[in-house]
Length: 229
Length: 229
DNA sequence: ACGGTTCGTTAGCGACGATAACAAGCAGGG
DNA sequence: CCCTGCTTGTTATCGTCGCTAACGAACCGT
Image (cartoon, rainbow over all chains, first blue to last red; front, side):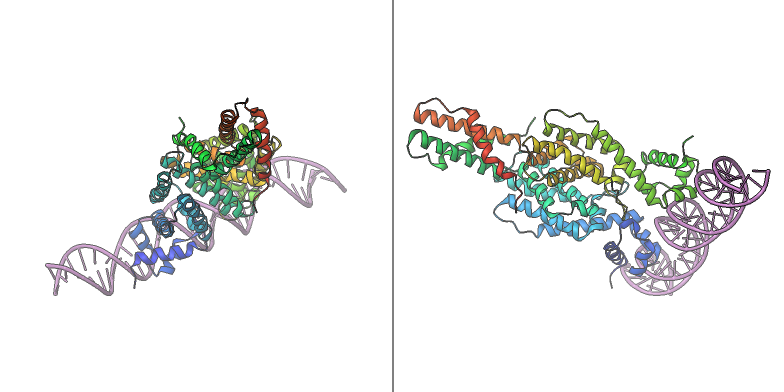
């Protein structure tokens, strides 16, 4: 048999799969957990305390799911995968997600700092790969803010904002801005082709190596890594 | 003397400036509005009905504030200004904002479609100026989702996400991606300079006009407007 | 065996959302 | 004028909620 505290947390989590957190009566929790009402207040002091404890457990699951995400060689692709797993978690546990990311009153779960820390590490891998254009802190918070916004809108107004293409658009926008958007390369590449064509038509000589041009443009690009004032 | 309905709405709005919506007792509303309790239920049928009515009034103020925003010649700059006024409104009316954008239960205010419509018009002005890279609908929803996310995180976790620089970073990211980021022009411009230098060194002739190259690159860019499959 | 801690049970308080029942005012038509 | 119908105010009450007090039973180490 599990302890009373564990049963209360588990029962709350199960009821949270059906109703919103504030719509769950403590008596229903006690019934399901086979516990008397005072046990909740002995263990958590408050209903808010119970809910924040549940939110923290939710964060633990959330972060465990993110840690289980394998790291590929491309840290930017890992950022995208983390974004998608975030959205999937929100859609799979809507009420728990709202409890975690829109705390009521002054009951802010402190586990969000850990989520930010994990994102920070993922962003720092991008920086180490030379693919970050701002401070890791600002980058991580930008991604998390936009990610939460997409999830909240998808949960609150699914008919208008539930489209997965919306999530992908915002994801590519913010990740692309934070890291060096790979479209830059293709665009500069097309300008390179243009330059090659110009050289070819104007001189009739063989075009310059694309690798040479790429090296030159990369040299021009790196100073942009410093944050704007 | 105003009608009972107006007094109830006004009283609720005033109390909403101090507490969260769900923490406001209907009796406090009745006391302040000088109304008996049944009046609320005669007018709005429900507390949810009252709150959604208040949320709709909040949307009206929100949209009026946006409409008051003057239109400059640069539609992209107008998008940025709209983003900033959105954030300012959220920080000025935190509880009302949460009531508007994170509805409880099934009480979704329908006024959000109007907000999306206004954003849509602002985005279409960008498209008419040739500065849009996706469908206006997707663009508007992307901006609104990210905007709401920044506001919600700033309200819920101000010590971590209250930095205005964070709002600006996400704003520039999503607006830059949706419209044609002006950095593209500068980057392509530098590549153009590179091409000019190449042409100059390899041939010794006068470089091609930058306007000609810009016209060519713009011709290559427009097909990207079509949404990805 | 004993005292302290944890857990379960009952009962109850005060506040809340919501409703019923009824009275007061005020319109317009006979 | 009264009668009728509608909106507004008043009081009382119901059921539920979060929360607590009081008491008792089980457990555990010394």
